[in-house]
Length: 163
Image (cartoon, rainbow, N blue to C red; front, side, top):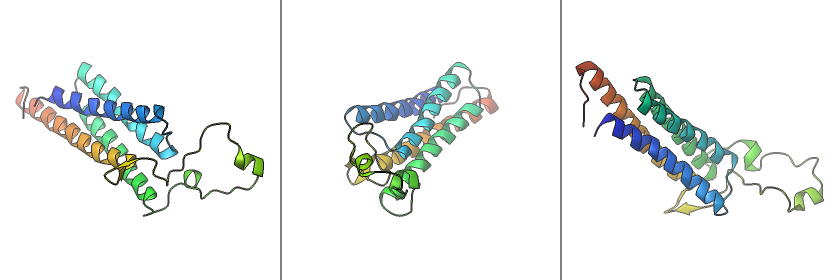
């Protein structure tokens, strides 16, 4: 495999995961706050990949690996919140106060649907979307790391190294 292929696959993987998230949203699965947090590093990885393919350098694959690791970490944290292993942010897990809300406010059906971060809205093989994001993002991180290693090999030998 070449360095550019690894970068394309890794950035493309983030694009596919992000597209999947938007597809699920379009199908009626609105994201919670932590789901939205997981999207930003994927967007960054896509931009990093595009920049890297236009202006090659050693730092961009490292940044891509960090972006993938960040979204994977958020996915692991989110999975722990969903499974009750630890507490999540009170702003999206129901730990916040209802003071100041009337019965009418609580029963209102207008406005956006509130999605709690500690509730699983979809799963496959007992893994939630957050869990699948973590698994896929760790794989993408490995792809970026391979690109980093290929970058290091090509700069030390002066050739384009393949695996």
